[in-house]
Image (cartoon, rainbow, N blue to C red; front, side, top):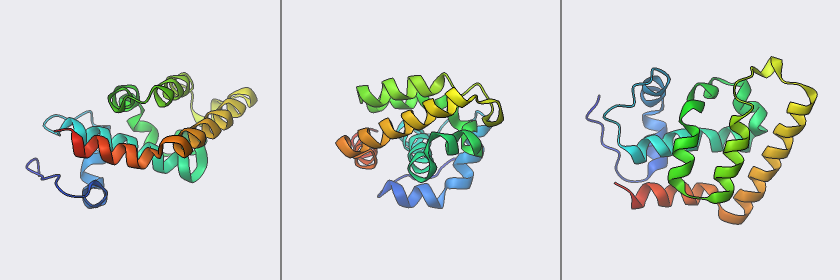
Length: 136
């Protein structure tokens, strides 16, 4: 399985190889996975979760297991607004969803709204596709 080919439209291989890549990611075993694949995979999951239910959903689902890769992957995309947002979000990641205070929930809501604004300005999915297609 380590000889997977990640060619063509990234959305297709994302879904075709989701379980395999997720298993590798949560076991800290992204070795031999091309960096652009790692970035696409980690960020695509974040984007999907936040678009579906905000940062609170990301924190409350198993996707949180990928949070250790967020800062690194976000910096590689090189969108300053997104980097700043994810750095703020990273401050809340160390708490379980149940431990979040009322103020934390307000901050998550604000971060989610800021994320939607960034997406409206830059089209984050398109930015992610471009990153994938222009990096080896």
